[in-house]
Image (cartoon, rainbow, N blue to C red; front, side, top):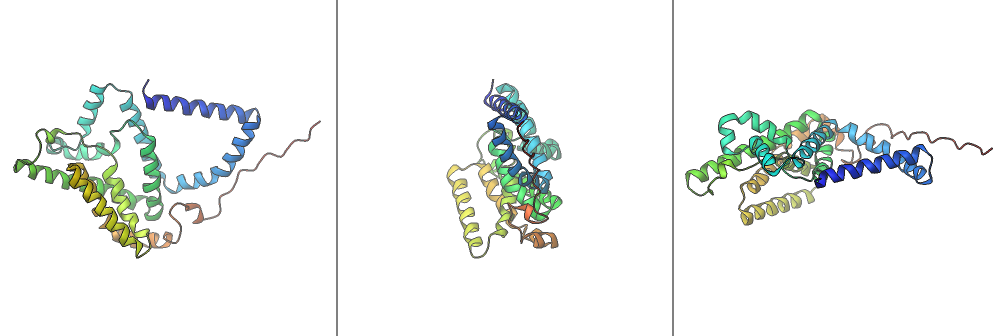
Length: 267
């Protein structure tokens, strides 16, 4: 059994135990129920404010689980079919540009879901679902095509390694980094400019030291996100810029807590 499968089984066991403890009014069940009653309104508001993000996270979780349960040969074939490498872009560009965004390429899904919840969810709440999807698409498609153009040029100049046109390039990183770039405009001045300079410097150094085309793509994705500044000046974005990114429940009515059961008098 793979590690993701073990993690899923452990989570299921923990959920069943929690349900049993709450249903039978065990002491630990009362503790779990109390914590859940406090957490639920905020978690519910966070998810409801960013529906597309968490639907996307569910799809990524499923495809990662499928990939983790496949043999090495099969998983490699799956990723190579979905990859936005030069060969696939020449033959069916639209298909791979779409499909590659729904495969992470990593066997561990929890860090990816955490990154989506921390980056995509607040951007969706701030910009709106349609504009957040548009910014993600600009990063994913734009960085992919610009990176592919760089690889094609390197191949013409005999500067790229052999076989790079068939490499595996899938994942959420380009779109997520583009969203991270546009989120920079929620940082107050002058710290915004410090953050932009630091982010571009770090990504640039990684690209130079690692000399990987995907690292150059990450740098391009952030730059594309910074170019999406007009998205932050819409009436919705300006209105919601007054609300902290990670507290969407402050936009409307305060969260309603589930009513706690009244204690029954002992006979």
